[in-house]
Length: 77
Image (cartoon, rainbow, N blue to C red; front, side, top):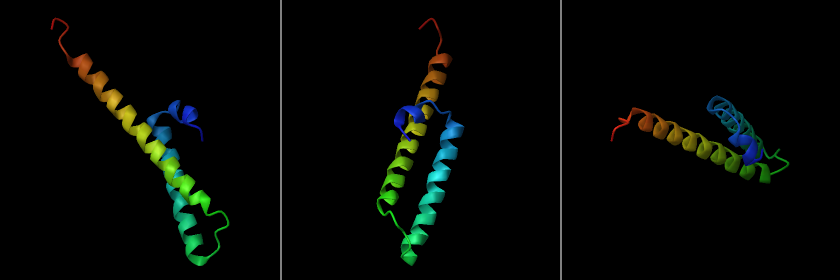
């Protein structure tokens, strides 16, 4: 999935996407252990996709915290 598509998702959608990546990664590890995996590059792609989603979740959390801190500041100072 492209980064532009991921950026438009809500944090809950991103968490679901991350869970899907982790499940697929888990299944591929079992396939690799039994010698059944067809596309070994998919494992690398999944690791990177999961890292992308984690990065976006972190960015959104930081932005939300920053927005909350700015809202809590007194307007006069």
